[in-house]
Image 1 (tube, rainbow, N blue to C red):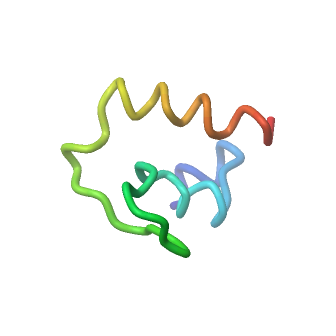
Image 2: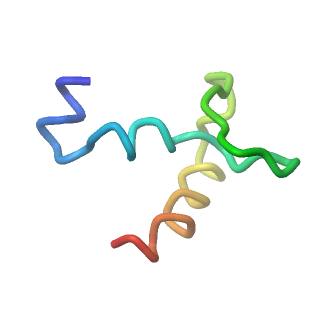
Length: 52
């Protein structure tokens, strides 16, 4: 967390770094390590673009 905080991340950005759920849920917090790949990183760019 300290590494991320030094680079401008906060609780919102840390906790939202999970794949979009396949079903509609209020909030998704857990993802397996295998989910973090290039496809997901591209998805992050698309999802967070409106916030940047």
